[in-house]
Structure formats: structure tokens, C-alpha cells
Image (cartoon, rainbow, N blue to C red; front, side):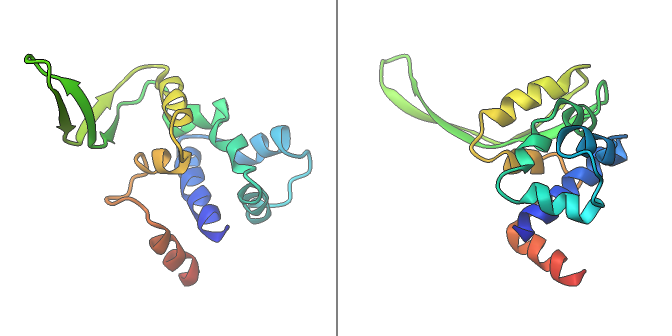
Length: 145
């Protein structure tokens, strides 16, 4: 749970930097009384309650700023394809950077995130950190606090 809470903290700080009001969202969607940021994060980190935040339209609009130019890494993928001679071959596509300025880019990302097994892994790609955040790094950051 601590790893999840620390990742929620990183994701939330990115959205708050862009103007997301966590307290207001929490009081509207989770409970009307504000327990404080730490307790609110703890509540969301338990029992998959974090999905309410991750898939919230309000959170998504601020996490992926509407109309802002964003860059993200499209991961490497391998898939089968039939070539000209009718043989099935494996095609490996290298990872690449994609940039976009769509006004409703958050809707695209919510659909992509919903199609993945782990929404946290999808969201990590957009954190302003040079490397992906691993659980070991999150545990180390939590130990330092």
C-alpha cells in the first residue's frame, strides 16, 4: 500500500501543479469531511479506491492539461503480421516519443489507460521524471521521509 500511496502522491502533485483541487474533488466524490491530505491519500490507496481518482474526468483534465503540448513515450511492441509471400512474421516496433496538442487529449488517455492492465504503469509515463518510477525507488523515497 505504501508504494501505491507514494505513486498517488506523485501523480497528484503533477495534477495539482496544473491546477487540480484535490480537497474539493475528495469532498465531492469520496466523503464530505476533509481528513487531511495524508489520510485522504491513505484512504484512496486502500482497497482499490484509487481508481475513483485515476479515472476521474476532473483529475484527467488536469493531469493531462487541456490544450497543452505533451510528450510521452510509446513503448516497444511486437506483433505478428502477414508479409507479401503470405508468411506470418513478427514485427518489433521501437519505442518512440509522441507529441500532441489536442484540446481533449485527456479523453484519449483515459481510454488508453482503461485498456491497460495497470493504470499506474500508464500514468508513470507522463510523470516529469527521467526514468520510470519503480517500486524500489518509491520505497526508498518513502523511507527517506
